[in-house]
Image 1 (cartoon, rainbow, N blue to C red):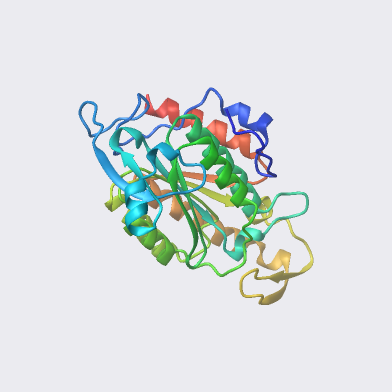
Image 2: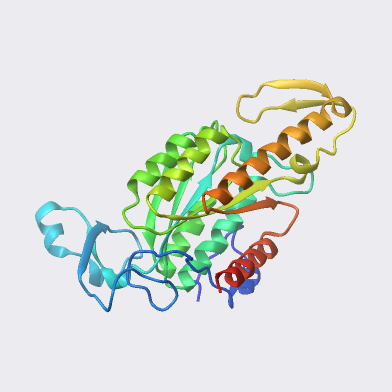
Length: 302
């Protein structure tokens, strides 16, 4: 059950109920003792100490290491192998291009935040650990993976504090995250991926080299997918603020050709890398899109 007092523009209990009977399963081997949902490389039950991590509000005080606190004045809790389950890291793109939306549509960033909230809810219900990394051209915030209703509330509350603003250039941030993840697990990317595709794919290959499983939700506004503009239009870059006046009818074919080539390249190269890629249109309600993806993923995994 979600914690009491959880109110957020990105969290709607009625919409979350749609995922009550669904699960997000790992297709590949993940590390940790798994309580029936995911395959694990460990054999048998283990209560062996795994590692320390910094204390966060909402952590069980029974795990708090008072001896370490007395010696160092630093707050740590202890983790054990049987408590790890699957670890999922959500990568949320907060670059300026994610602010785009056409009339009547949510921004790509708001849509991504709704997806993030739903995934945090779903994974917490499964007793899996979930963390959040917010990035643009650098990592802006990192919330370590935990599994508790209080941690779920903390992440969903934090989602309201972010605003898309800086330039794209995600590859260095993604490489930094790939270097820092200690256990094999699931990485979910929420982004428009508007960046150098060569650099982006190299970053994804870094995660695959470390044997993480990747799901990508490549999010676009319907106007970006369809280019419905007519007449003389002023186009403005949300990251550089550069402006371009152009007649829509003149550039439509070239734009759609370039955009479709960009998407097809991502689709082809992610398929070759065994990455689960989903092209997302913000016109489709996020709960409908995610439920369909989960059902398809569950069916393909059987």
